[in-house]
Length: 484
Ligand code: HEM
Image (cartoon, rainbow, N blue to C red):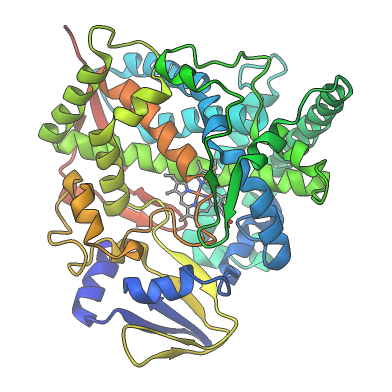
């Protein structure tokens, strides 16, 4: 990635043409050009490279196109309503506490934090997306979590080792046999859970219980331009005053997962969502929500381990919020007050965007804004997020980790499309609010308990970019328990 940036700095052009054999790729690094692609309702089709995900994700939100993508996006966006996210707070807290218990065993030693962040992320997703616990007696949750992590590794390897990409080569490898096994574990559990959840749904309906999905949809307006929902204040089936105290648990039995809302959506008049389509969407959430968040949280802990002064400011903010009850569960209201931690997360996502590039295929000629260029129909357009985030046009000192880049006055002076860790426009990340909320709970819980110390200086981080940006040298840190 650093090499790509060096090349870019030498080329000094925001539009680069690359030929891979006869295939034309155009890389965009200017915010106005990026807006033309990402902000449009026309250039929504993903490039061929995404086909690697198909055996796992089928035709879920990440890959699907046309009317299928549009109607599913509209159906799924309301399941990320903030009231639904608030109901996940106890799950976020519980998993953060489990993580802290594991960290206590590592205290004082150097270790790679990514494996832990990956594990806790998949456990949280398992519960919030599917309503399954890793600790369920039959071990299916555990096997599923392991399979998701291993599948992500296989996809990384195939992206990285490009000779493994063609199916006709891959199918002769041992990895293909392992992939078939893992996908069987993943898909069997998803199918089994859908069946059980559907029975629960019909039982609730028989009792005349109101559809929670309907309530969420009823209080939201879908914004076609941003692909997100806009919430109105009438939505209050989970009490608002729950934010003010730490009883923000709707009760374990009553808490629903994304999957439950999707089942309700599938039964709502005018919607069409088969069991297989629900399976694809749940698998997509498990994939998209896992590696991205694990990388983001690992980068935050590494980078704060380098910048001790910034870490102390985060800790001061946490002490201010939690006062004399430093280890109580984090409430939704607390997360709203974590302004500095939020800036730290945003700055980390600027310098180390978990999705370092996005690729689309344009189905018509596109005129760019940055110069007299026209991209021909059929071209693969690559949006260079990592490079845009380090462009001196938008950030005066881009190589410096500076959370104040996200002070409101600085954001106002920057084009919207110069900061795109979650992509932007109609096909942007549907899970970004979930991601930010979960990251805040997890990181606040860790940072109020431990000081993180990076083993390496920032300039020695060796970045590895494939689908997800990671550190080739591992996210090695040392944690010191804070004593009072
Ligand atoms: C820090 C964490 C995250 C980052 C940086 C991130 C980033 C992104 C980006 C850049 C895209 C667009 C990808 C593309 O066009 O190729 C995307 C799409 C998506 N993300 Fe995220 N994501 C994060 C967390 C999550 C979470 C937690 C979930 C779900 C719980 C999620 C669900 C999705 C889905 C379903 C899509 C496909 C949306 C569509 O095509 O309509 N993401 N994400």
